[in-house]
Length: 524
Image (cartoon, rainbow, N blue to C red; front, side, top):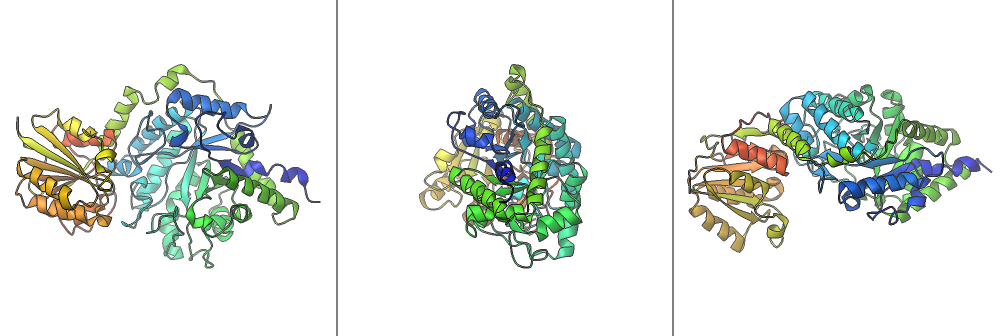
């Protein structure tokens, strides 16, 4: 029989997520035999509860066992798992727009401080993807920008910030998820770049991350024919992990997979087969976000693959050692009430807001509509295009952070929440409200896939009143909007970003950011 002892240790190659808010609701005994756990917003409702859950998971370990990796996706911006109570920091693209890697380091240091206070040991950040396709449905503002050299600088700064706080960093999604139009949560994207372009664009930030001593690299669920002609997902490819990442780039640290429950993998392989293939390809950690059944199937398949010789024992032992080395560096600290109290504190939120302000970008202002010139008693219409028609009112709570911040100015603020593609009765209501407004502020969300937003703004411009469009996600919307509209890029719609936008609209601050992705200038 093959090495039964090694087979019994394959749990050290897995991290899993679960449902529940307390350690009693978690599969704590199962997790205790794994490398660790991943927590999501569904697991985290306030700072005290979050710390208790993390401590409970660590306490479930056998005496003398290595500390668990307790990770979370806390990127800032749209991917902020503790935003219900913690500090939502600016998106990566906002930081890229600031042009200041020192700011990025300080923001990720703040992120790290809050995660450390909550007991986390690992952040699945920074995103090292170079967002070169405006149609990218899954990366967008999660990337620092579209220029590989700039992304590399901010990735390095983010790693340093997390390290300063004692949090392990994870650069993702190798070998790059920026040049895709397919969401890997749903299906397998294919990266069409040639090998030379891949190396000088997508790989550059990962090379910088490796040079900066990143703690782990996450492999994305993408097919890269230039490296793996067979079309095998990078997560399962020896050529991508073993050849490109390990041998060519010389990386010998921990390699983890993206969640194996995502459609790009689960539509192609059973959970057991996928886990075995990932480890055989060179991964050290296989991630499952929710399903205990999937994680159990993976563990059982890994054990069987060691016992029957499908997996090379020496390779499995190396993977276990890499993960163990990362866990050995964890220094578990007792809960600090003062540090926990600073999670989401007014001081931290003020720092995040100041950082968001650095990225606010005035893309264009042809009619000098910024700042708003609406005087006392005049009416400013603020329209948020978001969500489905039936859910727009419930998805956007009124007043919003933008509306409240603008209310501190002289004008009267009237807000409307409209669907992403307004039509029919809600469209008529929008036009009726515009008739009595002195100025109009619109907040757009991915107008390229919601063309009725653009139609509405086209018609609002025809009123002959100042129209300012706040692009709340990727700034590519600017190319679709009418030439007569002023455009501000905020790179996020959290309270910090929106209050910073309000300061610009009220003339209290200048927009200092620079768009970190190319625009065609079609509407300029």
